[in-house]
Length: 453
Image (cartoon, rainbow, N blue to C red):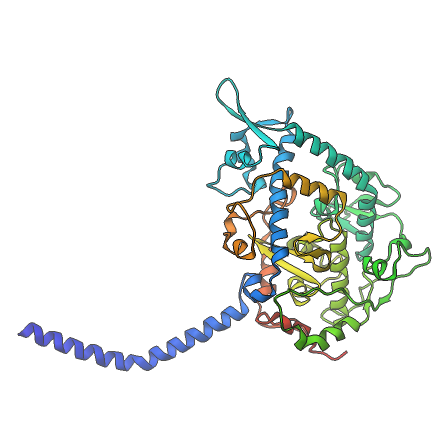
């Protein structure tokens, strides 16, 4: 009986306590909801979480395709650098980070997926070795020939890259990040940069003698013309007396096919397109950071750099290295996300890639240079497709875990510095916006000018 009385009194006290706490509980729930809602709107670390209807399925598939190629190509380059172009499979474990093959995946399983390019065999002691097939060796010889044929065009693009910089020179190590993107050979830093003494030269830094810079030898007015000008005006190059200045050419726009809200901001987009801007090759030191003219000129610089890339795609954290040299915004990611009709930012794994949307039709480049066709040939001979055998739809891509996705090439496979990662995340997370920066929660509002021009 006493036990029942104690139990009844315990229930009564518990009910009274709940009544006392219920207002506080409701307040806590409301506060938690507001906090979580606000946090979701301002600190999402995934670009694609913001709006699924702004995804471009074709470019997501293209991202996976190029990363698969990079993975296979790194293995081929490792083998190429070996004395007999063979290596014990267990020795490849030290290159796991370069290949970006996360554990617990086995190197041997990865190799077995591409028997037309690499093969496995055991020696008399039972040690497993890896080597390239004859077809793979022929492909590497073909690549060397194509790089040599592309060399003059690459030299022009590198020179124009230098011409866009404030001091007409750039750190050699920074340019090396774009070696494969621009179609530069493996000996870019040691030999290639000395092949064109009439265009550029390597110089030492006065402050840090161990730092090397590439600077132009002379200004070439014929090359001080953007790819957009060439396309719209039908030019191959400018005249000898050409001086870069204000431009008023609109950028080609290609919005995600599932995106249906563009019509609401058509007037703002048209206003942006009509605004004059300074050529990427003109001196931009006097432009005020955060101004409408500053931002549009930065769009033009990004458009030009992506036009130089073979795949019309670059890794965004490599671009952040050039903010000072190219007079670019501190929060470059916002600029790219803001103009989602011109650029498309894809996040697969831990890195962001930005595409020039006009250059693609679905997942295919519209115009393919010989080196791109060569990459596709290598890819066609590889059976490696990641954790999922066939990537047929965007839903398939969404199911792939970040840890199973592929990173960039071996030359740039070192993890980004904390500063670089913080800058990228800051561009996505910061809830306080200066000037005409975009709101994270709704990318389409990016075309709303907060200033009158």
